[in-house]
Length: 473
Ligand code: NAP
Image 1 (cartoon, rainbow, N blue to C red):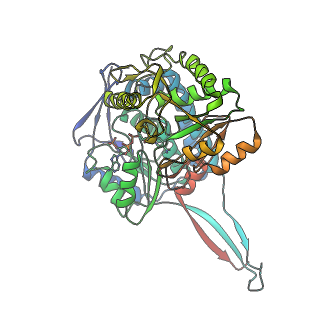
Image 2: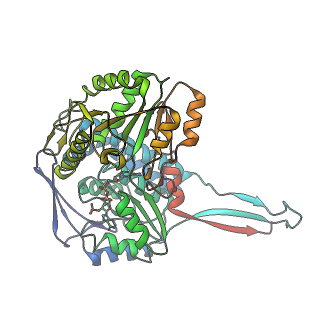
Image 3: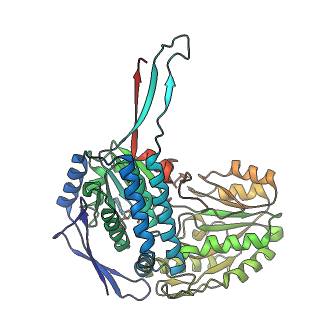
């Protein structure tokens, strides 16, 4: 039974608006829902109501709302897992995991809501000093805009809204038009958990009527964006005088050194390349393997990769669902064909059916292929050989991106050298680039972001301002 949902303005579903948006399953093509979209006037109302809202819930109330939302989400985890699988094509194994992560985000944001991070400085610490004290406190913003991508339809949204609630900041969410049903269902759940209406609007509609006016609106204090480099850079150039947080694309390497545990390396390579249909900003997009262990590693990776059965996202046995749509799968097929024409060899997979791209292992991939120079957002595992750690670091750093990296080695000195030498926001030794917990600092540099971190704790800082005041006592 398809869902019928409406955009929310100040916590209320709109009754009339713009055109209706049909959402289809990337796997079956069936309509899974329909959304009544908003227009420019409703975007304006959302900003007005957010800015006018002054009854910020207490820390206890914010904690309570987030904790209640976590309980509601936990109670509806199968509904949300199936909804994400239906509209995004991600398999149930992934979407159940995603719901668990979103519960963690709510739990950790709820705990942070209780924590006061104010500081105290003594004024008499120098010859020029005085016997005063300086204090800091955090204040909410008037209005924040959050824009999210399709690849984690629930968790990306939770990572914006939960820290905003913890900070007491009203937020206007513009989710991806490819996955609006999850975002709207989650927003309704937050209102049900007691979130005051003006603290949350969720708007979809033409970019020129919703996203662009919101980004450029001088009443908006912050734009927090997660998505592609192209759109992120456009936002950076059009947002004007306001805070901008950008979490953009990635082209993360997994470096496998000659002292690596090759079974672990193959396991990490498969998990990092194929989980979430390869559609994670921190998915492994290049596997850089020391030439002396390349054959042995690649044979193990092919064996591991055979376990990633591709197919119907709602089948519990499926481990890789579709990518977001057929156009995305055709793009993957195209970059694969280009790599093969340049000398690469497909060892496993390589076939496309509609929006389904098979998990694919490719060896002898030339270093200048589009597949590895740009971000390829899908279940491709390209293996490239390197001569030593220095060569691996140079190659890892050679693209425009700098989100995260994984390094597989048993040697602490090389691990430290890699941590220091990689130009990226994060490095994981003996784990996938995407390893994190929901409250650890997360984010990239270069084209992957401006170095401003997210993760619940850092995001709360973004969604608030520090006020400094002093007292004579
Ligand atoms: P996208 O095309 O950039 O879209 C992201 C969001 O921006 C969508 O809500 C989109 O709305 C909106 N948008 C489009 N044009 C806009 C404009 N001119 N102004 C303001 N907003 C605009 O990204 P995507 O294809 O959904 O997501 C995949 C990308 O996200 C990948 O590059 C991935 O690496 C990146 N990502 C990064 C992180 C991170 O934390 N670094 C995490 C996840 C994903 P519509 O849907 O209406 O077009």
